[in-house]
Each structure stands twice: as structure tokens, then as C-alpha cells.
Image 1 (spheres, helix red, strand yellow):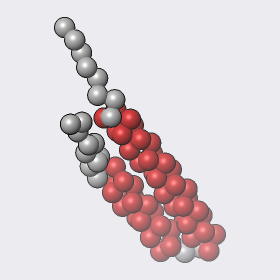
Image 2: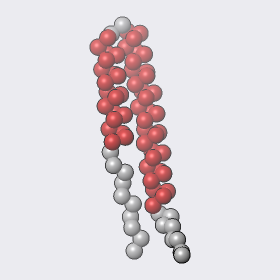
Image 3: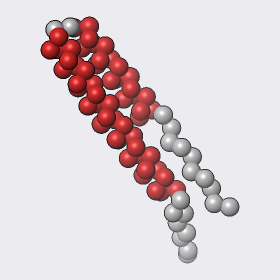
Image 4: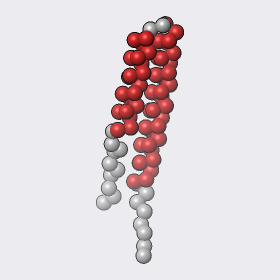
Amino acid sequence: MTHVVDSTISPASWQHTADRIALAVTISMIAALAVSAGIYAGSVAAVATAATAAVIALAATFTTRAPIPARAR
């Protein structure tokens, strides 16, 4: 039995996963800075807004579908 591996599919999915993780880390860092600024300013509304925006952005990052890799012809 011969097993053929299509090398064009795996790297694309790994790259997409790495991109999502990098985006999530970036969003988390920006959110942490925004929350810290809100705490420093003493604004509950700023903290709540930053936290809500971070949750929405992270949810959107991980619920979008992966791109469909091109099929070999």
C-alpha cells in the first residue's frame, strides 16, 4: 500500500495556526496595556471597554475559518 503525502496542505495550515497565535499574543499585549492605562487613570469604563474589545478580537481570531489550500492539479 502506497501513501502519498501532499506537502502543500500541512505547511499552509501550520502557518495559519502560527499567524493566529501571533495575532492573539499581539491583541493580548495591546489589551493589557489598555487595561493598565485605564487602571492608572482610574477609569472603570476604560478598563471595561479595553477588556471587551480584547475578548471580541480574540474570539474573532479563533472562530474564523482557515484558508482552503490550493489543490494540486
